[in-house]
Image 1 (cartoon, helix red, strand yellow):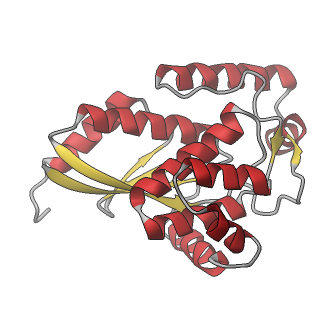
Image 2 (cartoon, rainbow, N blue to C red; image 1 turned 180 degrees about the horizontal axis):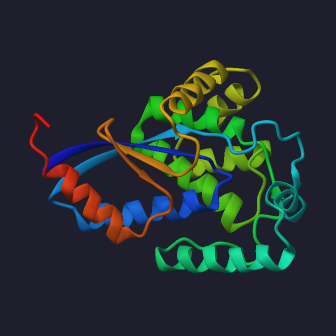
Length: 219
């Protein structure tokens, strides 16, 4: 099997990141036996300046994009349909509020130092808590619950959250990917060379990964 390195640059706050991850997972299932891939989740903050407690989602979207409640509902419905097609269930009423996700990224960085599969599980638990259940990704108990679901140590996670541990590493990683030209998410970087952007359907990921895997080692 051809090994692939995949960096998944994303934010817990991004609904299309949930769609993109589920699509990528389906593509990798289809390619089982052809490629082996390990996904590394890299940080990107859509709302780095968001204050504690967050902001009403409809109010935020109106301020940022000028969208109306009717347009926002149409967008939610479209995203929910795309999610259902790849097995991710969005709550019908949407996110409710927009939150700062820096602490979630600190935990994801820590999880990645432990084990890629645990980091993957934590990412999915956080996406489900926020987009599927409307729970706050800045709430300590929500974060610790996701840590438990991922099979990680909640006591150690609490220590991290009650300090500034891994803050510098996360900010450096965010800056590095921005300097590489990543300004929208999800962005999927394969073997440090190939960029796939957006919540693409599984078929697109499958085709792209198969083509990358077929490249000669010297390419």
